[in-house]
Image (cartoon, rainbow, N blue to C red):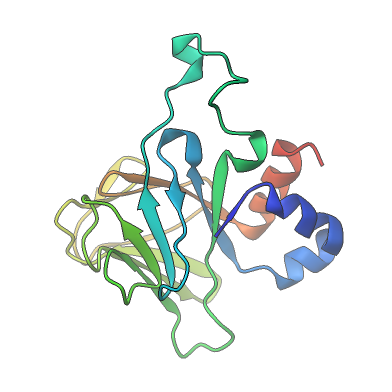
Length: 179
């Protein structure tokens, strides 16, 4: 997991064709201004910890030069890398140490949800979580599955993420960072 600004260097070094060929099939974006997550070293998988939300400067009249995140840090990027083989096409999302994407938040169950690669599709499923999983504000019942598409808004309990396929992610980064 990296701040979005680090992808400016990656895109500059690789160029569009190389990036699109070598990148994972999709990414999750976490808006750091509305409650960011920080990685923790030496943990299995990616570990995310909730920190306090930054007030919305649009409504508060706050001085954007003080206390707000720089543009390069406004989003955290979580690549959905499934590995080289089809042996394990599923990523588990939850607060358990064994989760592929570990989310430390009181609203997230130990094995909250999963994302599975099925051919060219990525499918989200709720794993019987206590606080639920939503796609675009629609609840996903335990055992129910949803094929993810560009721009889907995911909620794991109270944790909000945006799903982008690799080509849409590439275009978003270019526009957002003015590359």
